[in-house]
Each structure stands twice: as structure tokens, then as C-alpha cells.
Length: 227
Image 1 (cartoon, rainbow, N blue to C red):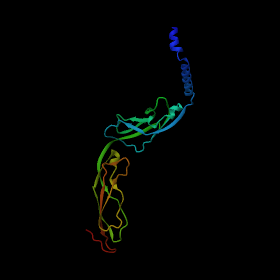
Image 2: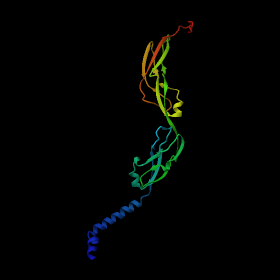
Image 3: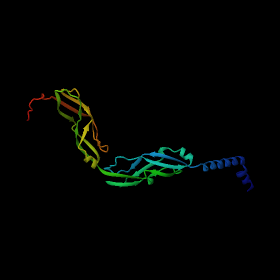
Image 4: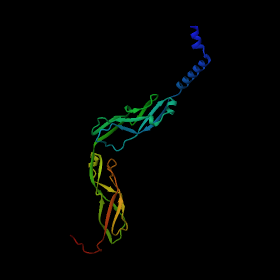
């Protein structure tokens, strides 16, 4: 027993004593640190979205997560260590409220003191795709003797998709303004079409060719010929 004591306890006793002192000092330094708090802004993630379902809510805020813990853990914290993720398994059209405080993951050394917003209400709708006409927008200053005869868009329709109710409310897609100033004959411009509703998108957006046919205006005072 004496030999075991000498081998396992007294051997390099000085080094062991120094190691113990360092470990105790480190523990005291860590345990004596005052808690530190930090706020982290993270995007809200949506997981397992059912097929053919759209989020109809236009403005989705970022989540601010306030965390408290040892200073060393706070200093080593990265934004990617904190996540706010909502599982949409089983979601159906309509409104649903989620509690964000139950959907936050973070390092185990820290504690969450606050999540803002606390709740998030989302609107869901089925996805709809349909075709709508393209309405060109023509602007410009024309000579007095000329006026716009007709305007044609090619392609004349585009496909849009998004939440059903919002897609159904769209009458047409419109083009970026086409400046036809000075045109006196047939002129073609290349532009793009869009939908003003930010929740509705143009599927496979491509160039739109807008052809404008100008014609001479009837002289002032000339009789109008009806067809």
C-alpha cells in the first residue's frame, strides 16, 4: 500500500499540486464571472412546408433572441448558433399562430431570456398558377401630328403563381414603362412584365417585345369619320 501511495500520489507531487491549483483558479475565474447578455437577430426558418401550400403573409419579421450566460460563451457565440425554426408539417389553408419561444435552438451553456416577437401569426393558402394578359405601358412625348395607333405585346400572356386568393385578384401583368418619344412609325421595344403584388410572381420571366404603331392624327377641325 505504501508503494502504491508513493507511485500514484507522491510521484511528481509538485506538478500535480500545480495542476490542481491551476484547475481551481480556472474554475473560480469562470464561476465568478458575472452573466452577460446579448441580442441576436436571426431569420425565421420554415421547415417541412406541405406541397402546394403557400405562406400568404406578406411581412415576416426576423426574430430577436436575447441570450444570457458566461462571458466566454457569449464572446464565442456566432449568429449561426442560434436558430428560430417553425415546423409546418400538417399546415393547412387558413390562419395559424406559432409560439416562437418554443421554436428556438441555441448553445446549451446559454439561457434564453426573451424572444421577440413572442408569437407569429401566419396565413396559408393553396398555390395557384394561371395565365394573365400583358398590358404594355407606353410613355413619351409625340409630335403633334402623330398619335398611338395600337400597341401589341409578344408574348401577350404570362403565367403567374402564388397564394390562390392573391393570384385570383390579379387582372393583368404590366410592363416597365416604354418610352416611345419621337416614334413616327412602327417601333419595337424590349422590356419586362411584372405583377404589383409582391406575393405573386411571374413564372419564367422573359423579355417582352412591345410593338407600337404610330399613326397621323386627324387635323384639328377635320370631320371625324366613324366606322
